[in-house]
Each structure stands twice: as structure tokens, then as C-alpha cells.
View 1 (cartoon, rainbow, N blue to C red):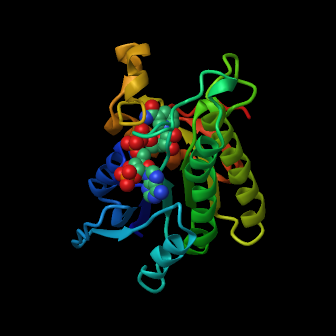
View 2: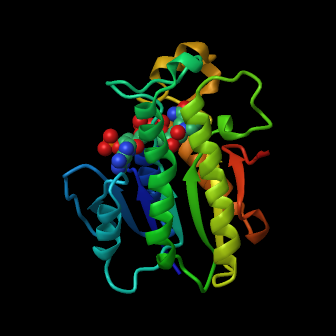
Length: 240
Ligand SMILES: NC(=O)c1ccc[n+]([C@@H]2O[C@H](COP(=O)([O-])OP(=O)(O)OC[C@H]3O[C@@H](n4cnc5c(N)ncnc54)[C@H](OP(=O)(O)O)[C@@H]3O)[C@@H](O)[C@H]2O)c1
């Protein structure tokens, strides 16, 4: 049976590359892409639905726009923030911490994906393997934190990993085929990584297309024993 997939955050560098890779995959029948873009591009294989993950009602409405009986083999959440054009930037030290920055980063990186889970979990296929993948980050690992800094971003991804674990435990009781994972995409060329790419050796700075392909390969190989864990683009498990 051909697959039906959803990508939330399809306008981002990685989200867009995941959409393109899935569109080129003959085993995929339908791609539902969700973003804040107002475009309503539709063809036989791809449908666009508006979503603002900072607005619970918008997430709910996005699922209500799905055709009746939609069941996803894969739901891929590719939204996120590290900095913006205004006041958000990764904190170098305690003095950089602010209420507004914490609220913004935790809202987009933790609360939004959690609410996406709430409204999209009922759409996961139950009769065969289905995967709910969230883009996380290695810096969300507490045991891996040797450098400090990046308070809001680190904490938002650590909390996201905990939510993923919780989803995996609760949903396993009603859907044994559902797998929940966090994914570390590598360092990928994008708006998000732009200010930091000069610190990365060119061979370690991936194109979105490469990262998307590698993460979809990781997803393909998962089984239920992997649910609740975080994996890097190359399949390495990242410890909490
Ligand atoms: N790039 C890396 O090196 C790297 C490394 C580790 C982890 N990650 C993770 O990978 C994910 C994607 O990053 P990226 O590199 O692809 O960054 P990106 O190109 O900046 O994409 C992020 C996307 O998130 C979307 N978004 C933000 N707030 C939203 C909201 N309220 N509602 C709907 N969409 C919203 C943005 O949508 P708009 O287009 O509407 O603004 C944007 O398209 C993030 O979670 C990031 O933490 C990236």
C-alpha cells in the first residue's frame, strides 16, 4: 500500500527538502504540507494547508481540513527557531536570558510541537507502522552538554525530547504500530544555522537535501523498540 505523509513546517529549509524527497518517492501517494505560507498549491500528490503552531486553534483547524479517513504513515515536524530578525538569539551567558526570548523559543520549539502531537496523533495509521518524527537537536541532550550557553534553545529541545518520550509511552497502549522519535538533522545550511555556519567545517555543513534523505533512511529502519528515542541523521542514538 502506498504511503500518505504530513510535513509540518514545509517552508523551512529542512521541511522543504523532506517534502521534495517524499514527492520523488514512488512509494508515497500523498504529501500534505503545512506551513504559514498563504499559498494553496495543490496537485494530485501534494496539498498545502495553513498552520501556525503558535496558535492552538490553527493547529486544530489544520487537522479539520484533512480529508475524512486520512491516516498518515509518517508525520514529520520540521518547525523551529534559534534566532529571529528581532530579539531572539542564542544566549551566550546568563545576562542574555530574558522572559520574552524564553517564551518565544519554548513556544515554537516545545509547546507548538506538543500541540501538533495532540491534534495529529489521532491521524496516525494503526494497522501498520506509522512514525511521528520531530526535529530536535543534539544540544537538547543534558549528558552531552559540555559548553553551556544557548539556554532557551537547549531547554526547549530537552523538553521536546521528554514530550516525545511521553507520547511514545501513552500512545503505545492504543496504537502498537506508532513510533515517536526526535531527530538531529546534522548542521544543515538554513536561515536557522546561517549565523553559525562559519564555525562548521564545510564537510560537516550539510545541504537540506542530504540531511532529509539520511533522516528518511533512519525512519525507514525504525521499529517499535526505537519509540521514544532521539536519533542523529546517521542513525546514531543520542542519549538524554
Ligand atoms: N539547520 C540546522 O543546522 C539544525 C540543526 C539542529 C536542529 N535543527 C532543527 O531543525 C528544525 C528546522 O530547522 P531549519 O534549519 O530547516 O530552519 P528554518 O529554515 O529556519 O525553518 C524553520 C521553519 O519553522 C517554521 N516556523 C517557525 N515558527 C512557526 C510557526 N509559528 N508556525 C509554523 N511554522 C513555524 C518557519 O516557518 P516560516 O517559513 O513561516 O517562517 C520555518 O520555515 C528546527 O527545529 C531546528 O531546531 C536544525
